[in-house]
Every structure is written in structure tokens, then in C-alpha cells.
Image 1: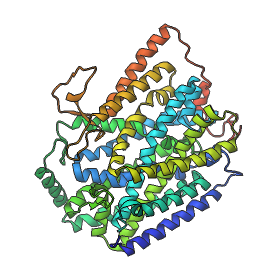
Image 2: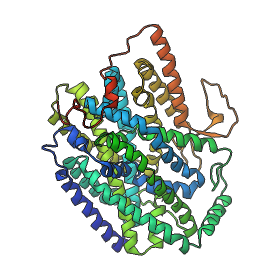
Image 3: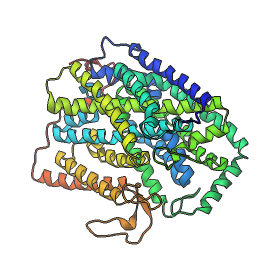
Image 4: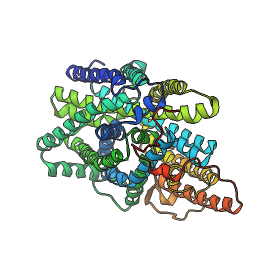
Length: 547
């Protein structure tokens, strides 16, 4: 750690301390009589308005991983990395109506998690447990990915030691995050999201305005990127899509769009809002972040033109491609502005990490602890359990970084996307109909998740030496259905999660038809049709925090 960039580190530290103070003060912001209730600690009192919700959901969905890894993917693979742009554009129209129905039924029935809804819709503790476990497992590597983004910044500033010493700054940052999240709950990341988004917008606008002129203009930037990919041809690399990866691009964008609001942390932002009108306004306004994402993606091409090279990770001895954007800012901007950019990325890691840990803690508390371990738990006991669980989740994510190659933890995010996509039939489709039988949903979940993991296990990458879980793109020629290869020899790639979801739905439908023919009981629906249209101000609406 002898090459510490002191000006950048000082500015980073000052801004980090600022948001730390905001995190602790957040417990007094829109204060309730007590935070000893999941409505208050885990959902901010369910009273966030349009502006707060916009920053909260934006801060939750557009993470340090997005700011760091999307440009890094475009730096390494080119056009394929831009799949993130159409997927965020189509997400909001897709989820508008389901999000409204989820808010209404959750507000009417006091649901805190998507698994709560599934429990009430089908009267099945087992199905709700599977949804909860899937949400927790899929969220853990996502939190770890925030650490990857934060570490890339710390590494660029010279904090790149080996062993446990090299991770000390990261541990300190997450201990601080854990403490103020424990105290303030969802109010902390909601308040900090204001600072994070303002910093990100300032940084990216400055980069888009300044860097093209410094690097020789847009034509030169794209010509340099094309020359790089032409010199190292690969099946999926280049500034244009090719015949092999177009299907992957489409299915990855669509699958990611369907998965995004199935993540428990995404729904947490929805459930924390005040009413349906707030959600409607946000689904219209949130695509503004897609513009930001497109600009961020271009930083990958800027890095190629600037000749940026990833920094070696002292802990593994391998180049860390996630440092591309920090290295670009470090080399092209004055130290003071690079410090602001690093703070924006670092704070951009803290906001989603806090929301994700809260969402995972809510799942543990409501759908495992209260359902199976302490059915008579009071609201105060639930809140206490959630606070403790949020600590465990955070430091479990830290363990990924300490004991697993961080590059592998990024690959785990691909697994998380495949996993959470398998909850779509039980969560999203069931908001509209109970036609799918609960045993069909369970069977579909088992098949979709199991086959998805099998396909992911078989994907290797000779370039990195990984034999398993090295990506989410499956050549159709490798698609095997009980030994039958319907597309034998084809090199066209497809997103594994999309294939697994199709299998999930097919099995769920078949089991449902059989179960209905046999007249198997489909559980008791504790929701009413009017619950799905409830809104703030309704006279019979359940009070926040009420038993």
C-alpha cells in the first residue's frame, strides 16, 4: 500500500463520513414513535413520497456493480455489454401493473415480503419458504458484488494489500454501514440515496462532456474499440452483435427485465412507497436512469481509447477488470475530481447493499423465523430479529470477498439471476390468477432451478481456466433434454435463465392440469379481489404498524 493516492483518498473519506452521519441521523427523519416494527424499520413506515421513492428505487437498482461492471463488460466484450440498456428500458412498463397490485395487496394485508404474499395467496408455508430461501440466496452474491465495486475504488487509490490487511478498509466501511443500518433501517439508504445519485449524475455528465474531446473525439473512440476487438476476435466480442450472440442479447435483456423486480430488495422500495400514484409516477420517471446507464456503458470504450489497464489484485495476483472505470478517472481527471468519482462509486455500493440486507433480513424474519421458529413473535421481536439478520447477511457477503476469488463472486450474480427468475410464476403470475396449482408451482420451481443450475455448471471458460459457472450464455448445441440435443452443432447462444423459466412454466402447467383433474386441494386464499386495488386513503385500509 505504498502508492496511496492521498488527495483522492482524503476526498473519498470526507464524503464517506458525510453519508455516515446522514445514516445515523436518518433514524430521526420522518421519525415514528418506534422503529421496533418491520413496517417502520424494514419499510420506512410505508410512507415515502414520489421523490424519496425515485431516489430509493434508483439507488437500489443502479448499483456500484452497474457503475463498475457494465463498463468493464463493454471494455472486454463490446456490444454484448449493452444488453443492460434495453432491459432497463422494458422493465418499467412490464412491472408497472404487477407492482401496483403487489403494493395494494401488501398494504391491505400487512405483507412485508413477496413470500408473505405467496403464503397468503396459497396458504402454503412450504411454497413461501422456497420463495424466501430463493430470495435470500439470490441476494447474498448481489451484496458481495457491491463489495467488488467498493474494493475496485479502494484498490485504485492504492489500498491494494494482500491477505486480511488488504481488506481492512472494506471491513471498516461495512462495519459502519452495518451499524447505521441496524439503527435506522430503510430510512438510512433512502436518505443517502440523494447524495449518491447527485454525485453519480455530476460525475457521468462531466465525463461525457470532457472525455471525448480529450480522447480525440467520438469517431476515434469507436475506431479504437473496433480495432481492439478486431485484433482479438472471439465469438461474442465486438462493437456489433453477431449471429451467435443476438439471441443471447435478446433473452438476457428480457430475462433480466422479468427478474429485476422479483428481487426482494426491488420490491422493498415499492412496498415502502405511500401509494399507487407514487409508484405510477416512478415507473414513468425511472427510465431517466437508463439514459445514465447508457452513458456509463460508454466509459468502457473510453477506457479502451485511453489505454487503461486493469490493476492487479494483490490478493490473487490477477488483473481486476472491475478497476477499469476507476483507473480511467484516475488517469484522465485531476485528483480532486477523481476523488469525487470514487466517492460516488463507493457510496453507490453502500445504498443497495443496505437495502438488500434489509430485504433479506425481512425474508428471514417473516418467512422462516416467525413461520417455523417462533409463531407468536411480537412486532418488537420481529424487528430485533431482522436487525440481527441484516448484520449476518452483510458479513456473509464480506466472507465471499475474503474467502472466494472476487471474480468468482461476480459469476455468482449470474446464478442469482437464474434463481430469482424461477419465482416469477408464484409471485408475479399469482398476482393475477390462482389457476396455477401450488404443487405445480413447487414442481416448476424445482425443475427450473435444478435445470438452471445444471446448465450453469456445464458452462466453462478456457480463457480464465474455469470449468464451471463461468457465464450464463449457453450454446444451443449444448442444450440437452434427457440426452436429446435438439440443436446439435449450433453455436447460437441463449440465456440460461430464460430456458430454465420456460421449463418451470411448462412443468407448472402440466402439474396443475393433473392436480385439477385429481381435485387436489389448492390451499386457502386469504386475499380478497378488492385487496389488489386498495390505495392510500381507503377508509378500511390496515393501519401501518397495526396488529
